[in-house]
Length: 237
Ligand SMILES: NC(=O)c1ccc[n+]([C@@H]2O[C@H](COP(=O)([O-])OP(=O)(O)OC[C@H]3O[C@@H](n4cnc5c(N)ncnc54)[C@H](O)[C@@H]3O)[C@@H](O)[C@H]2O)c1
View (cartoon, rainbow, N blue to C red):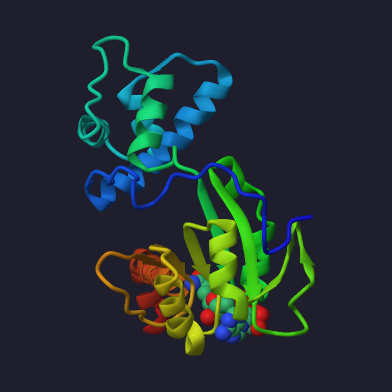
């Protein structure tokens, strides 16, 4: 059983970690897809992969793949392709996945609990080290391997667990104040699920996951594709 406080392990100090190379956001997204394919190939024992195969797995053009990988200094070998192990290592380095990421989740409601139970983070290098909430009925309960801690102890838990990423799974009304405390505690990588715009200093990386917006975009595209039939239905044809 893990509690809010865990035994320390070697974690790179954020302040001394090498700064990430600035890659175009679309490239970063595609690199994660290539990495997933490369890891599957590694597990199968494959040694090389063509840009076409990587492109197909990521659903992009092979010119995209070659351009993305050129940012990492990987150009492949004509007729052979890319060395799978080497490329997977380079992408993991570029994405900062060779560091150990220790994630604290704040908010142990439906979402926070589901995230804390998800087994897929650890295999990708994200160790969930703490889960915190403000509700007395939830504090102290066990969720997966974790015991829910009290958000009143946020700063102490972040320090003792050496968390270097925080996920906010909180109501919008409290997200900014908790976010401010996280930033003041020195954690500079934050992922927020709260449906509200948060303000953070420039040196802090804040990402927002907004599934409702994604669904709306999906609905728009679905409607555009079906537009001829919908229009016919509406006109009673
Ligand atoms: N982005 C998305 O895709 C997505 C999807 C679902 C939910 N959400 C959002 O994520 C958030 C969480 O959703 P949920 O369904 O888990 O809600 P929930 O109500 O089940 O859980 C919220 C939890 O936050 C806790 N909490 C409240 N104030 C707190 C504080 N100051 N410090 C610590 N914990 C506090 C509550 O006690 C509760 O356990 C909501 O803002 C919701 O709108 C986003």
